[in-house]
Image (tube, rainbow, N blue to C red; front, side, top):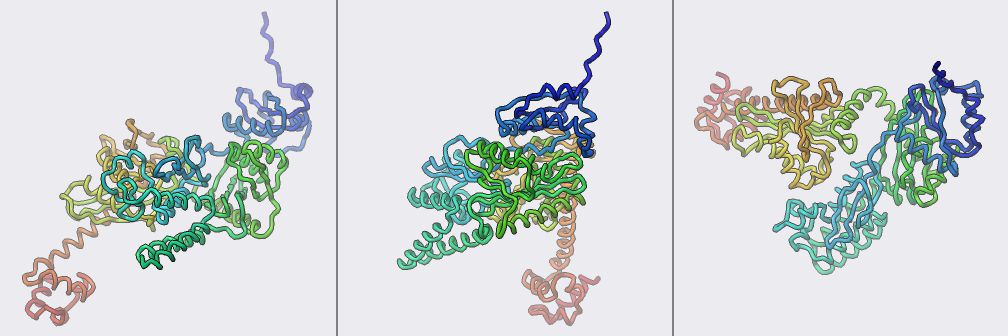
Length: 609
């Protein structure tokens, strides 16, 4: 019995069998892998255009050379086809489609308005629970910045319910004036509710009415001679006006997203500015993967479909390129979001200026990525995947401790972002008041000093905190950040060298997880962790050596008989430091108040041998 030959792919016969109705088609290669997914208003006409036309660009020609079969799925309307196409692209990730990172849901600000003393919190995920959700925001950093501003102006609690319900005295947030301590009854329920109402009004875009109410209260307090209360309200009003100056978009009304796309040398960048109630909530940059020779309008179409299908589309999208089938996209987005969605590319006035700004941001971001960011992005992406992080880290901070048998202990904090080391944000901490050689106490002191400033809004919250050490150091970090109520906002990890202390054998411990992580020696994510760990080590050692050297030099003054603390301080101030004292002559030293000639001679002989 002879085997029947495998049927060959006959595109003409396939096209004749297709209906003239909307649907989705999938191009499949010889191995059965889907290599492209597309939607069509008329399946026969659209699929037939691939096999009847001769003129195709290089991308389409390369795809057609691999096609061994085409499968279709019928839909009622073209808008339904668009939604199905988007779902299949996310599921199958065909290599000839424009692919977007399938990020987690957008971040929101959550207000537990159903509680007696509501809390504000960062939220990502389902929004079915009780309370109010404000957003979406373009990034986690935008949410954190807004929460920080709100806490300065309206001290509404941001702590977890378990923390709130078990307090017997005010926490640190009360001491730094970021909370009114409702947990221990330091504020009445009515006054707290008023602050909550102002928060809601501000997040709803009605900050002018909030300012009007605060002005009335300030004037009433001043008339009643309550000047301290009036001064506090004045400071709140000033802070609110600064926020308005920073975020207000002149001429913009309602909810608008401004989207610009730039394509260069087979790389694409999409820039999105998010405007809600006339307030600029920030921008976010995306780098979709697209086959060569893909036009910017195709990328925009795919981006908008993948990005907004799911209920997040605002009523208006301003885009840099006009797109074919724009009406279909509007219909699909409107049906999904439950309101009409308009997509506009021809705009004037203030909207035009914002589109130009988005274009310039996209150009800059693409240039930076093409020149320096390719390897760094791979490292961040690999780290996110291997550590199973919710979102890619945008800012990482790493701490290390350096000392010599407990002498001159120095802690370092180095900062990396997506562009690499951010040296302007590096910090050192001289550790005092601990037992010599107690690395745990040193780490705790450094973390408290650093993240108290972060909590006060003097530095941004990182996405990933890395500690050079093991589970012990990790426990110190968890304790400090738990007290400051920052554990929900960042991931804490500790990196320690393996048993043989060789590079590539590092062990990772992550807060809240029992398992250890050992990344392959060639993993780009491990290389990133090694780089930031080594940089923290270098920065700590440099600071320690400098401090140790200064301390040992300073001890020579302390050993001189008759030269007490006040005279030493007078000498150092007069000559600008120890080096100036060393260069001074006997007569110069004797001119300092409290230093006679005999003591000046002793100082000179001690320092100059």
